[in-house]
Length: 526
Image (tube, rainbow, N blue to C red; front, side, top):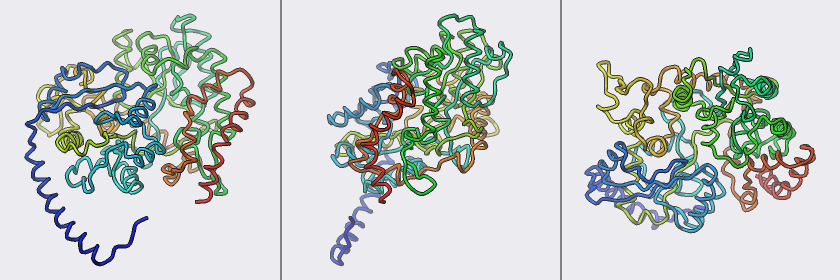
């Protein structure tokens, strides 16, 4: 609770504010001199399945290293280890200097309470204005600063400059082997209901146009992605982070307990029982499933983001590995509810957040160097480099003032510089943003990406597009912290378990509601 200030206290604070204002001006002026004479090593944990030990040998990383007189020690975290690694590091007070984190509000509140993560100084926005501008665009960043009475986490904006629709929808969709679909006499559709997609999958399995035999997998993904085929398209509040919602009467409910989630799980189980899903979907990694699609070539569909650079990666791999052109081999689609509407929850404009190690703010030189790097990454110059490479080598400004790519056809900076995709691409502003306008990416992929956002949004209705309830999204209590379930793993466990799905799901809901009901009671009492 904030206390009311007396006259004496107020006078003291006004004097202090003037002093700090003067100090702030000095700090900014000093920062502009950019004294980087001391070489620093910065540990930075990132979401990646790649081995990153030699990242400083890459020309692009070297350029940044020279600019800021630093070396990066980059620590990769896979999708399967991400949450657990960050939790262990944080609770063990062993966080790297900077850590990409898949934001969890209950954990964040706990970390703040226990001072397990660094707090940025008040007024940091004046010192690092480009970072602050991107931070403000997340909406969540300023809200969390208010909630925690200080900036402890830096949510990473998905769209900073190139928002594709007024209300953001998910970029998740499905890459499909177009050549296989056309070979069985079908035309790929821009979207399918779940039963329609499953029927197409059965036809592909039966006719096996790629002559894959027993190795053929139709829905080639794992635990984290398969719900996008079967569950989320029919049950908007079954997604992690959006489980609690208000029903038509104004009462809060738990999404996984709704009959729509049961329907999605029945689709999921049916696909598994029919052999349309990889038999080891429960254990394989994200990258291994993508490799099965465009390297091994044994899967018909692969769920992943409908971003331009991702589409280009899929197309390039099919071309390089099988000699297949984009036009003949690849289509992008997504699933809708049985009534044909795109059913989803508004996508927040951030993906994960950055955490800084506790006590890092006391090492002023390193702390400011890190924030200088992040601030620079949010400038036009920084974004141009991250997205297009080294100016004068990989791109240049043309006579009309627009960038001209100097790389050979078909190549992007992701092919040239080892460090960019796993590290710089999502340093702070997420790569979705520039992907919509990046001249290094062929126009067809940029159009595909923008079109899929616009099409999804056009297929929503006020009933099928749930808006973010920020009161719930950032609600925290002891009871709420006890319902931090990994729903994707819970859904997969229900799918592989023996027995009737409705009976399994009912027993699961009954068990979970022992922990969920107290949260519902708190929300309904707000």
